[in-house]
Length: 206
Length: 245
Image (cartoon, chains in turn purple, blue):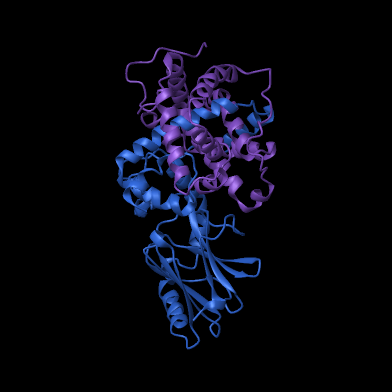
């Protein structure tokens, strides 16, 4: 990857420490956001190119409807542009920051009354198949994706389902408790246990 | 909810899996709990990695739309130390500059300023508003409904049919989640008619906007900052005026 560069010892806290490539990628994205904060639209375009498949894929997985997913993704990028001055690399990776915004907007969308009626109940249906004419981002992401899938595979069934139903399904933990037929309060514990296990396996540290 | 339980909500919070009231309460806890803040940051970072597994290249047109959109918008001014913001006065928002959604909320506030100054509870109308509230509370036909929201607080709606007005009084009400407002509604059958936003204060008395005589109930929903024309979520509280005493 030609945009990877050496990272000084003080790598951003909270950034995934999954090898040098991931750290270089994270530092590069943080740089692009810093430039965007000064009004550099080309830097923001590069930030978009490096993250849009993850952002759109996440929105699509949560809201299902491609047109809604595009709206959610666009709103999230506009928010990211406007608030790029507030991004602090010491508090997390730029991609994590963006995807947090995307996820919140996607969840707000599916929970709104209008969208609730249109929501596809078959939450575990795969999102649209990935375009084979992959961008550099998705090629890179697919390497990471294999690692993430490997980590997810080590979760217990209830942990995995609880995490996926909340993150990809957009359900609340009480809804997940009902869906999984576990006592109220158990779902939130499984979600946390599952995420902590993934965090440790993926080497996410603050 | 016990202290132990509160800490366990980090995962659900990081995945946006709390309902609006739980979220508001947890954000108050977060403002005071360094451990939970650190854990939420890590778990959000972890959750974002899951997006790697569902990446899908968006249509090229989306890139054009995004880039056309940003060319018309100036990035927010950076946060400068000691710069006062409206959020600084919100108890739930204290010490949360680390949260991306605080930024989003600040954005929404800027957009929402126009609507805010048109609200009936602008300071210059304070005296008149209190008088209107007193008129309802002291009306001979005043009827009231109390709702206990548990840890989220308590609220009472008083309606006077002869005055055609209703008043809501809150005690210890938690702040609306960041980027959100509480909105009041008159409910008649399936119809929700907006009765204005509730200012973000734990203890207050607010006169609802609009005609109250025919309403069967009053509801509160959590809406995006600035409110909505129709509710976008289920009410967190419903005051059934047919049961009023």
